[in-house]
Image (cartoon, rainbow, N blue to C red):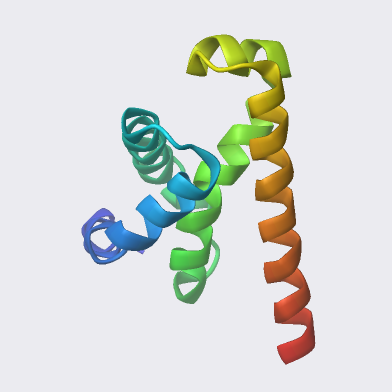
Length: 110
């Protein structure tokens, strides 16, 4: 996939990127920051995409993967987002539940 093709994919996936970010983050600015970071990461890691047909899935998984793989503690995330640690835990639980439901659905339809 070329960078131009990735740019087109990002533009056509704006609504889904926002929905994914919003499912984890409630603040509009945090959603924007997460999407922006995902886009930067996607362009810098485009060489890791093995098959173009999985590009959209790969792109959508970057907000969630960054969230977990950056290895922030609950306390650090709470401080960054200026919310309570309990709120961070609830949001992570919701995100895990949504991911599990999606994985379960894909297993059923496969």
